[in-house]
Amino acid sequence: MTRLLVLGTSQAATLSLAPDLEGALPGVQTRFYALPGASWSRARLDEAGRLGPAPDDRIGRAKSVEWNGCAALDMAGTDHIAVCAPRFRLFFLARSLRERDIFGLPRTGADHAISAGLLTAALADWVREEIAALRPRLPVGVPVSLLAVPYPLASDAPGAPQEDAALVRLRLRPAAARIEAIYEAVIAAEVAAAGWRWLAQPAATRAGPFASADRFARPGAFDPARPDLRHMNADYAALAMAELGQSLPPAPPVAGMPARHPLPAAAGLA
Amino acid sequence: MTSPYHDLPPEAFWRSGVARTVAGSGHEAALGGAMPLAEALALSLPISAGAGIFVLGDAFAGALHRGLAACGRSVEAEPPPDGFPPAVLKDFGWGQGAARTGPLRSAREVAQLLAELSGRRAPRAAIREIAPGQFIDSLRPGVEPAGFDSHAAAIEARAAHLAAISKALTSAEVVLLCLSSATCHEDPAHRSAHPPEAAARIGGLVPARSTLSQIESELSSIWRDLRQLMDEPRLIMALSPAVEDGWPDGARDRANLRIAMSRLATRGRRLAYLPLHEVLTAPGRLQDCLAPDGRPTRAGLAEALHLVCGTAPLGLPQGGTASVPDSRTEGDGAESDDPLVCEELLYEAFAPGGRA
Image 1 (cartoon, rainbow over the protein chains, first blue to last red):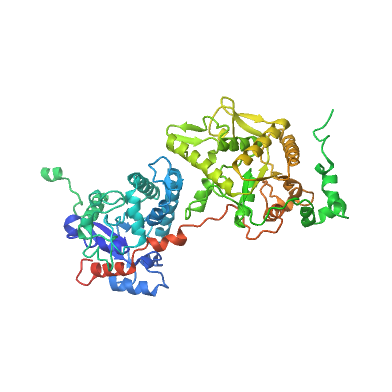
Image 2 (cartoon, rainbow over the protein chains, first blue to last red; image 1 turned 180 degrees about the vertical axis):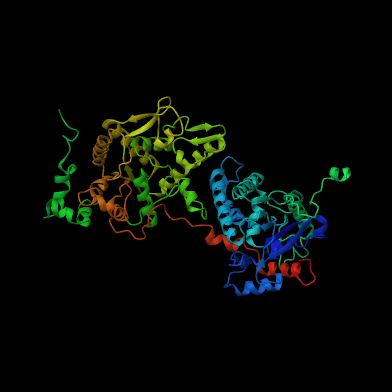
């Protein structure tokens, strides 16, 4: 049995909507712990190794109790931790690239341009910074997977944040796929360099560069009163959790218990 | 036998040109404080307060650019993209000079750049492949540490670089040229001049030293091209106080630079020689003004800027690079999802009887 802990913000909570987790991830016991974004970014391990909001974050502690049933999470016995990743300045990048082309890639007629090398170096710096910020929230010695949070939905919605609109413009660039490839390659390389696993957004959930397919929209996602293009539905969660499950290393055999992935051939010989 | 100085006017020499110009004081009074000395050596035609200054030259010129930028006086050809990490921008050549060329130590390198800008002569084979799929601009190799990933990207970047400098020059009124050497690295096959940083990355470059007459010709070329590129420009020349190169003839080169600059400065009211080197390395001032590695101290930079601007500048940077904004100042809020939406989702996910 692999004891899996999924951590993060509301994006982690989204993953908990996956139906039939026990059936989809046989031999995996999954727990979730999520905090509001502002509290998650300041969360820390306490002296006993429990994860929770910062001591001065009263609202975060109240929310932790309300949503997770505890003020702080005891992570003892966890075999693997999956963390919903930050977006690594994606929206900032989308805004910045509104006014800049990239040398060697198809141009949009912007007044300025930067090199792919500069883009790569800046992204790497941002990813390292985010990884460094995550480390104080994680116990030493437990393997970590970093899960990509989904790109916003492909369709725009009136009233959506301006950052989402900037991303829509980025998608329309002729070099969007190349820019996405650079973005994801840098993240994968830096996460690997940190000793963690990187899980990109499942291919089946995508609708072109920097976009999630609309069929994964939550109910009411396009409501003009409060559009939400960034959180996906239970179908998305099922696919993401299935990929996470497949990426997990085999659980160490425990005396008296079968391995998580018994070989069919061995079963046949028995 | 004559010396290179035999036909220079009295004002070209320290004792007759500097120390005795401080009224009623003599040399000793000049040593007593920087301000009388700086005032004595100030430009006869001061730079007006609103004039944009474009700084070209060596690493000391880069420091001057940063100081002037902090005062809002420097014109910058390629402003850094907002919000990118300052350390990364520094690695890619930002904050080190107005033109983002990397240090241009010799008049020949500057003359070559301006000749390319004016369309008189484009250096051939500026873009070099240093490894499969790795291209550098050998005229400014420091701006792309890992090189460009395609020849086309490198060509585009050079074209954009030149266009940006041309545009910046048209918005500047003064070009401040601060040089430290008469030797560069030459590609004999193409007769092109390269900075030392290029020699470390591409082969076949050899040291090439300009004689006094060649330096004079290079400076004249610079002045000719500036008049073509700018509307009524002013060119202020200075010998860099920093000694950057290790060439055996470095001292003689700098003397020749000093002479060539002085001679050109006599050719018009819009030309001037600024005695940065003389002021900052004056006896009793050197240790205050320059760090052992040749970079200006804060006091040295302040004095240099005082000499350039005629007034004490405000808001000097603490050193390093000109400050650039970081994405953290505006990015974090934008990265966060709508708290109300998130809370709603958390309720949905973790509600009693829910899945979690």
